[in-house]
Amino acid sequence: MLREKEIPVYLFTGFLESGKTQFIQGTLEDEKFNPKERTLLLVCEEGEEEYNKDKFVIENVFMEIVNSPDELKKNTLSKVARMHKVDRVVIEYNGMWNLTDLYENLPDNWIIYQQIMFADSETFITYNANMRQLMVDKLTDCELVAINRVTDKTDKEQIHKIIRGTNRRTQIIYEYINGELEYDNIEDPLPFDINAPIIEIEDKDYAIWYRDMMEEPGKYEGKTVKFKGMVARPKELDEKGLLIGRKVMTCCADDIAFRPIACESDKAIEAENALWYTLTAKIIMKQHKLYTQKAPVLVLKEIEKAEAPVEEVATFY
Image (cartoon, rainbow, N blue to C red; front, side, top):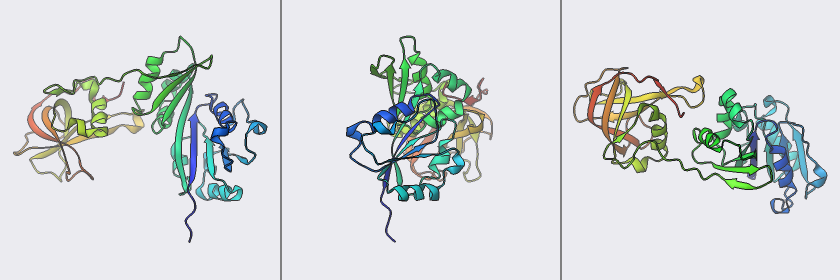
């Protein structure tokens, strides 16, 4: 059986009236983006602005309306792509739908080449406060966040903080009302000194430190760290090993999860399960029996009983 050709997918997300339609319309009017490829345009959200197909630089754009996430089925999408013999797919995704519904139903030969989120500067902070889970859903995997309708009164510091709380790698661009573009250049210094003899992690900074260490473990290898965490003693470990960490919330109560690090010593560690301790340890990279791959492991130096933090669940805010 012949393998189906790979079809690139350009995915545009964001809430209603965030500028998705306008951007896609302009893109399909741009000759540089349209080398006569047969294009499937999946519209999952119909706002006030409509597409003007007469202005597309190519005629072979086939627009299909998706009214419900239930219509996102692998077989259905594949059938539509074969029917139109498309070379690429452009998706305007509904901001109120979870991206999981799309990811799980993309045909195997559909590959996301680019994912951009659009947002209105006037509603971004409010949407984040009221629909945080949906905001995180759109921010997590995007390569670029385009904030439009920006003015001199726009709180770019707060917008930056919200985005970086979920995605530290995405680019951020601001488009002013007059059309001027500005790339975000706000620095993201870590709230602790990574070059200190002992990196001291305050209770409020555990989530930031944990994520940074897991994303860039190499820069922590050989460093000594001190932080407070809750001990877990799984049956797979003997008296010389334990887990220690905090519960972390990314966006809402539904996604709270215990995020621990394996700790080991050359002698029995005197620490009780489910109690809080302040630990000082050296970080090394190795394969541990509780890990599926090489990852940071703490080599114990000191441990002492501690009071639980005021906020037991760590967050990025």
